[in-house]
Image 1: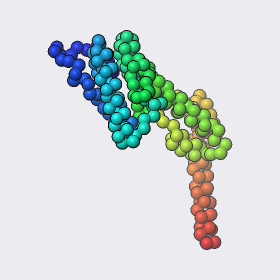
Image 2 (image 1 turned 180 degrees about the vertical axis):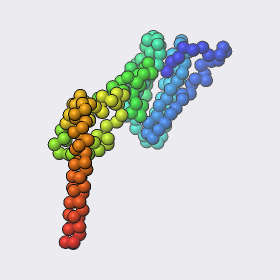
Image 3 (image 1 turned 45 degrees about the horizontal axis):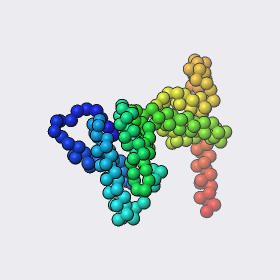
Image 4 (image 1 turned 120 degrees about the horizontal axis):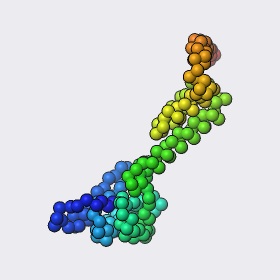
Length: 215
């Protein structure tokens, strides 16, 4: 990564030869912070470190998947990124620079924003609501609600997804749900629904007792 703030005078680039490493399970992220004009020095330091990683992998018989290697430069200067483009090497492969990278399931772009990640989460939640629509004829409302809670992550616009799910489960529109007449109908139906659920539970209990008796 690159930053443009000034460092104390007299400080050399040598102290930057080692990266900051963050590891989690089998994922490892290396990062460098440097000033403008230091790209060439950083490139050499990065490639040395990458070769050390290759040597470590050969020693412990660890293979690295080239398609999972990612590199990104966080900078406001396009020229700084060009200094590194196509020159980062994890032998024998070259690590391409990307506009965004994914770390532990979270995507962040070169402006340190999460727009792409939020869009992805929203699309995922929306697609799972659409799957509920296909299951509607197989499950009752409680089953659909349980399935929704188990499958849908919290999206950046939860109210919109929640409304779609409520309408799907109840079979009504958002406007109908907020109409006084519909609300009175729901209040009237709740005791009936509760009684029906109790009857179904009683029937299941009798069935279990009957099966135990036959055994």
